[in-house]
Each structure stands twice: as structure tokens, then as C-alpha cells.
Length: 188
Image (tube, rainbow, N blue to C red; front, side, top):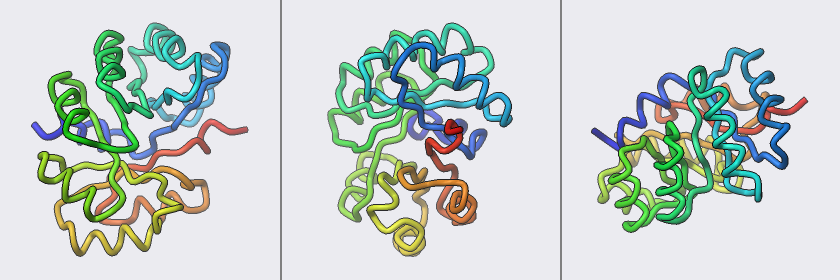
């Protein structure tokens, strides 16, 4: 079971909206926006003081319809809180042994970030196959992922950062990309 079956989340959700919630009223707004687009997945980042409350509220109100994930996880304590809230998946901008161990023990599907060859190799040695590629626009985007496809033949990416309506399909067309993340699905 690689990364607690993260491949099931990524396969079922080629578009993963990334939400930074600034007040709790945005929970209902984002739910409506995504539902109207036929998207039933959300990654709520830990970038605001409202994040944990927003995650709990979204999970409580819409958890039967949506896969509710948490992004910007950087500590074991974040993982423990995710387990407490029974979130559906976890996303980190990076990965190290300590975070990997916490992810594995949680039983929750997860994806850690890697953008350089050394980070990818370190993740492979931990037993990972799926990686967040963030920020994609700063680390070579499509060209970098095309290059990595020839080097890391069994690695699969979920790029985020700079993904938008004009390029997301180009990313999804890459053989080593399973899904993409971005905030454009939540914008007016």
C-alpha cells in the first residue's frame, strides 16, 4: 500500500483545488463553486489562523460528498491533527524521514513534495512513488517533468504552483502526472 493509497485520491480527482481560507464563510462559498464545476475534492492549506476550523467545518458539512484534504503540512503535530479530524488526504510541500514516518503511521493517504533529483531519490528510498511538484512554475514546470519522466520512470507527480486554466491540460497530458492542484478553480 504505497503512501496509504494516495493513488486512489489522485486517480479519482485529476483536479485538486487548493484553498487558503481567510474566514469561515468561505467554506460554503468554495463548496458551491466546486460543486457547480463537478469537482468533489478540496485541499485546504494551513496558511491562515482559520485553517483548522475551516477544515473541521468543511469536513462536518460536506465530508460525505467531498474528499477533504489538508495542505502545507510540515510537522508531525499537523499529521496528528489531521488524524483527529479524520481528513481524507494530506499534502506537504516537502518530505523528510520524520514526516514520512508520521504520514505512514497515520493511515491517511498522503503526498510529500519533491522537486530536485536529490529530493526525489530520497523520497524513493523512503518508499514513495507519488510526489507533489511545488512550486511547479519556479522549478521548471512542464519541461522539468518531461525530463524527470525519462529519469524517474516509475514516479508520478501532482504539480501545483502556477497551474491555471491555460496550462493545466498540458500538465495532465504528461505521462508522469496523475493530477494537478491549483487555486484557479476557486477564483471568480
